[in-house]
Length: 297
Image 1 (cartoon, rainbow, N blue to C red):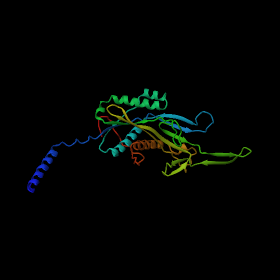
Image 2: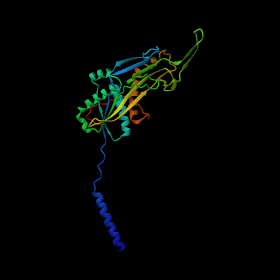
Image 3: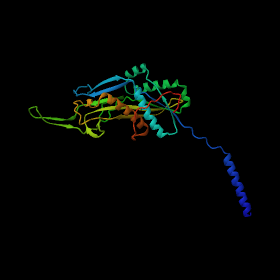
């Protein structure tokens, strides 16, 4: 076969291939995920304070709770989730949901313990979501729910859950007595926990502190079936101690109004880190989030 004929044949063959490829439909572009975000921090803050041990079976803590309007905390959580998912899935659309735990569910949770509380809250949320027809347009739901843990985190009291403040006012150490019963030597251990100076941000090692905490689950649900796809626990706290403070009680080193602001910062940062890990996140001033379920962002 002569070269011109070969060239013509190749051209014809290539032309046919090009035409065939052009006529083959390309795969459809992947549709951006639509993710619904919901936070249910709860309507109570817990305040737990260490007290001197008595050697009895009574735990060395006092516990109280205060009713709050939790929407500011819920919105802080939504901001953290939104920022993290915007980085993880930049093409996604996020829908903000607003939900308040029904009063009867709150009563049932108060009467329950441990993991049973977690399940009651999750089922109540799923029941609410079943009534939302908008789910058909969503791919998945990311929910932040308080976690009630019996685990004792480093330096913190046991049986903490949800959001609150723990106060540890007692220094750890030892006391030695002479033969007459008089104190002959005493030592304190101020290197027990990593703390942050609330005024300067400098870190140190102290045994006394006041610590806002946030313990929660980030639960991922399939939007259509409401099946649980993933459940990730998150335990965060920040221990504050101001070594230059004249306050006798460490709990007075951070005013209540200031502590509420720090709880908002912790809520946003923790929600972000539940998606992105321990990366740094710039926590800015609060911005309003309108939570209609029908308008994707």
